[in-house]
Image (cartoon, rainbow, N blue to C red; front, side, top):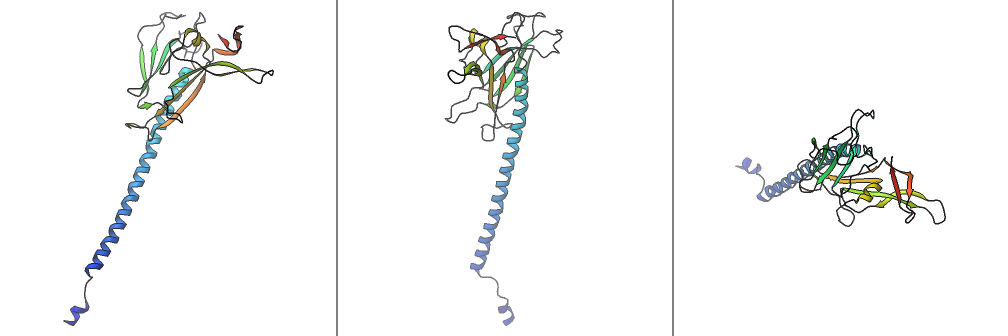
Length: 247
């Protein structure tokens, strides 16, 4: 009997303390594991959004930089372009005249979050305005699940913004043109001729995401190659606003 009394077990209090300490350790391990999984998921989501958004931005800017004027010096940007849609004449050929230009329409749909490009074929080799097919020959999806950026005050930043040249410099000193005068949308016939710069901005969300938590802001500026300030005709009534020539 004395031997059994010497092998006494743990008291109830000791068992409860050991269980409590064990539970704390297990919960800490699970919390660390959960945090690591969420952090890894966030990094992967941002990487996915960045890769998809960057690829889409590269294609969109390449298309916008392909702007050309038509044979009758019709400006590249089509009037009525607005904050969500821009139509312009484009040339991706080798420049040998073997292919006519096309009309492209870049579009952001705020309801679906899709950014697409519609391509309209010309009806003749040297088309003028209105000499393009009524329906697109192709509609290419550039990015899905996109949204608009927000500025510091929480206001949405337009998908597209348009700028014209304005003269800047110290009074009495040398003046130089800068494409910083923002134009109202939809573009009028006059303002469509004055477009010198197009800004494009959007948020690329991860695949399947419902919010912008892991989205990536992407922005770029595209100068209109047909709008050369050095070839501008100055308006004598308003000399601060150049009238770029189609070149």
